[in-house]
Image 1 (cartoon, rainbow, N blue to C red):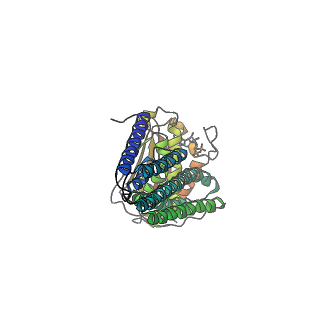
Image 2 (image 1 turned 60 degrees about the horizontal axis):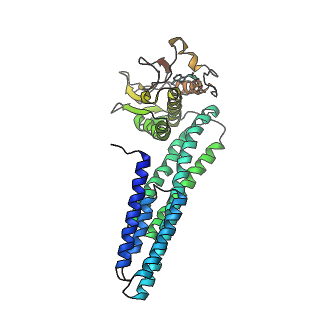
Image 3 (image 1 turned 180 degrees about the vertical axis):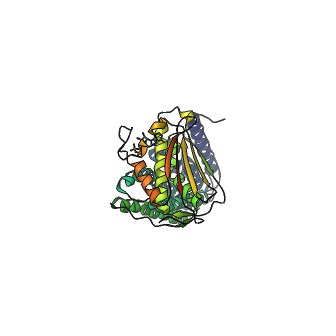
Length: 353
Ligand code: ADP
């Protein structure tokens, strides 16, 4: 059973309060030499997902206040050791709070970069740009996630390994910079690239695009079903252009489902191979669909039914697929919605030039 978010945050706050009370009791009751207050750093770490920046600041101040109070209330032990331990504990608390606040900021920047990238993939179609950036940006984003987890682990140690955490944080910031500089570079591009055909593994290329669209898919409450056939022969086409097309079809499908009831939004992406060795990809949705007689109109340049649409996404996509030696068509889906399919040559075939 899943608890409502409000109850969950009340429970989290109660748990944080209890942990702080326990640390306070132990820190006050034990001798000066026992630096139990460093465990406040772990409380800060655990509280991070539940609290915002200002909440974390308040928590940090409270932890420091409790550490100082414990120091004054502790009845026995070596006073000087207590003084040093209190200093170390406060330093650990402040550094942990500082690092988690920076880490959260880096994460937010990465999320924004990803959302911006999805929007840009669409604009890029207009300008004939490629989606090679999808691959390039995904790498720093994945690295940010890895370093973020490492940072959390270093901070969770008792006492926290602040040096290692600082190094992980530096990597996060570098990677976030890299992601945003890629986006800046792509923005400056105005011309499309000619098709560079080469052999590539079809399914992983599709999965990369789906990973990029994941946040948008989740935001729209869509169930994604990737039905990718195993052991496909390698495709022989321009990998980034094919990814650009898939990204466009996925965005169209997401938009087509935006007005549908939330529980019925399903996006199914299926790959396969024909007897002749041609690879095929189908993007099916449960969106608004279109009447069968409209199937060809969809591919007309500047034909759109969207208030802010431009109507060039599908015409460019078809042009790209044809330039790569494949074909593209759209059909109304049997159970409602639409399915757009395209083919690309595999390495088993002679590629039309
Ligand atoms: P735009 O998205 O700017 O309108 P496109 O060329 O991508 O341009 O699409 C043209 C039109 O085709 C859309 O306005 C929409 O009416 C229709 N269309 C595209 N994809 C779908 C889909 N998955 N389901 C229903 N209609 C679609």
